Length: 471
Image (tube, rainbow, N blue to C red; front, side, top):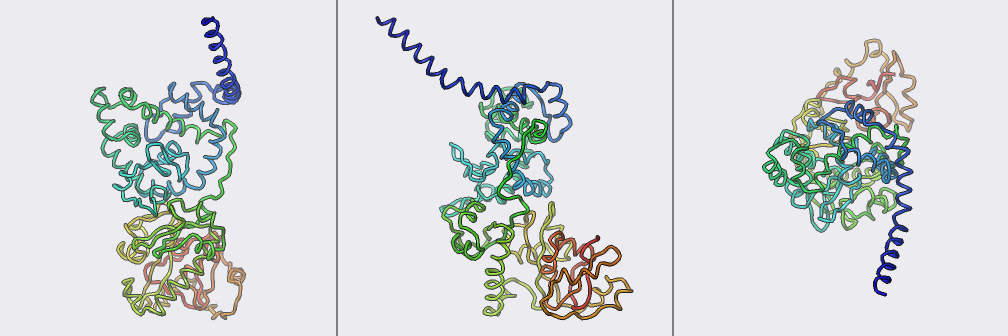
């Protein structure tokens, strides 16, 4: 009787397992058969060779397994990741250029978090780059009851690339640097000693199991992000692309409710775009906290908050505004939008000021800036109308006429100034370069400065013209 019961129990257990496994296997097989299984080893190796880059993108059974996983069970997830890359990759690429690091490192964030800034691991790592608390603190990230900068896309990215740079300086090998990023330098050093080799593929069997698969997963990620279209994967658009959002720095305390009212958007959107804050509240700080909003919401927010409170309060009620900002009283204020790959040193040279000036004017914690950041800059109020007029062709100097200050459309007014394949702007009273740049969505302040050969002292004379762009 007992053997019969035992046999029935074994049969029942087998049937139950088959009922759960069979559907999953059949679905995975169908998806993979239409994608990874149709690839030859030669094709994959050839494509990886074309990518090249920071390391030998070796193709072996471990890499193949991860490629098939992406193109199989994770195909839908991959489509969302590709869409989200349009939100984060421009930011990563900026810091990679500034730090002179390989472009492929941007794909590491996919391995770490699938581009989820709120991702948390079972062992306590958090954010896009999965920093442990101790490592985050060591690289300048603040973690307390109000804020966790491991979840801040900008600050965590800057810290991550500093960490990766330190690891590469230590091992002079990107495979080992990535392994150390995952399991720590101690485990990598131990594996090197036990294997007697610094070749990742020879010493990997002495690494923790997760790390053994880490570099193969990275290689597979590089492959699918470069060849997803070949496999018929259609990206799922993210809620926001990088150009759809703007980031500013706040020093005063602000609640998400207050921000949403001023910016005229839902509190939910403020929360989505600012994952570093734990209590729907941005605390007061001297070094500044980042606030990210949709472009139009940021414009409204700045009009109501920064211009009214910062300019109005400090300038009208605080006579020591210029002393507070350490700015001579004969300076005028403007703004500068950081472009991809630009450093503080480059901008200081362009604007003929010092790095310390830019850091002080913007109350930056360090001399570090990000793509799209709006910097406050100041220029002397010296009389140099000849400098501006000199930038205008001689024939046009005679045509300068003072413009009225009525509410006219500045873009429409300047249509008639399209001469010699260059669009000119006729300056009106009270306009700054920062304000003028907002009239032309496809032109940045830095581009206006460059096309007019402005350096250092910039004063806009009403009635004169400046170049906007070549047509």
